[in-house]
Length: 385
Image (cartoon, rainbow, N blue to C red):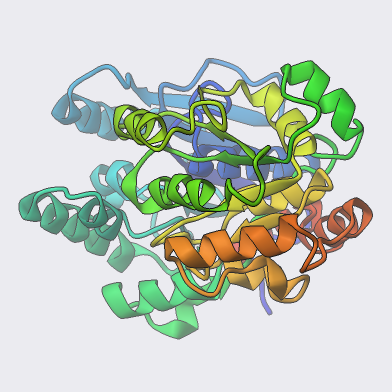
């Protein structure tokens, strides 16, 4: 393979916000990627919306393009205008992560510089799943298609999302590179016993605990998980589920918990501070990902495994690609409530063995260490067109 640069390189990235000030899977991914590339010696400029003035890393330049509080037309206009003031006028490579903020810049991206798009998910299809209007879905798909047509290559986190990119946006398979997400193995680690972790969070010591950090939207399948808890409660009367996250379904999920008589078995934590996330994984017996659609990878699974806690998922998107080589028993037979309940019962009652904490940690470290993943991403970014 031929590369645009061999030793240190200058990389221009476009994202959304800066993690952890702006939470979210995309922001976390780009934050970790940028830190790893800078630590390896590259010069990085990250452009986005609502970015702080500095990161504390001398090799990372943050360029704020707009205020997130401004209206969408003002924001897009500001993105276009402020991008002209960026520091890296002619970088070795450009890495885009969000179609909406990329759209105003298409004619301002320097020619003869390779442009990669990190495809984190089909924006239009996700909106369609959540019940957005047909007009809005069409517009988002149009924006995505315009941006993708300008890009030279694509990085997806799973084969499942590579297939969506090819099928829904007609991107040639030859332009699609599958590189899984990474996990910060120094932050997500097994440094606490389960009892110590529960003490820190004031969680019950003597109960079987499930944990799921999810945005409270329809496609995450939290309503099905709550119903599954009601189904297994007679056989596991001490079951306790902690749900961390915010979203539009919070009120309806709270009503569901109350109507099913599960107020002493399920707790909606709301926003969980980022520093408590590794503690929560270690406090749980099992992390659960009951997603119903468009789960492109499943970063939560990696974080949980790195903390020594097994993770159960539905057979959706890229999640099975993580767990099949490790422990296929951690994948439910389908996305429906019964399949989730059946597998939870088998695992929690010992009918199906759970991987040990050591095995979980070793698998995550061996296959998804961010240092290794970041170098794979860098190789794609710097491929000559």
